[in-house]
Image (cartoon, rainbow, N blue to C red; front, side, top):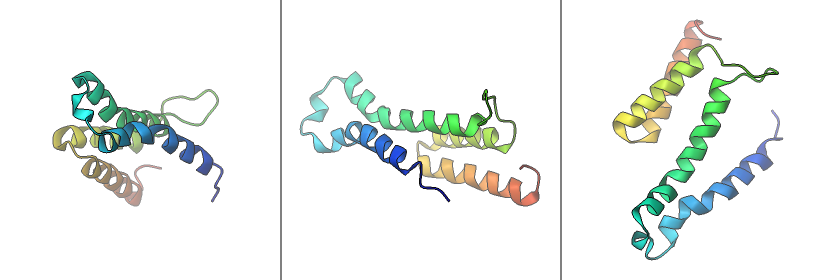
Length: 109
């Protein structure tokens, strides 16, 4: 196990937290234009989705190429569940279950 990416995770948290916390901490946030509130509400999830997509859909080879396996399927299932339920936890749980079952059956690496 390596802790080399902990500083990067902390940096990502520090960069995205203000935009995610602003609607909770700033009084009168509802008086902002609708587009600004929407941007602030979606900035954190968009950054998280971009990081997840790169880490789940691309290999670490030089040059990177698209990953073929259960991971892209799990990402698709997660997106579908989140779009249907509007909740992140069930989508992530469904993706984790799919990957765990496929790997337990020995179908995917």
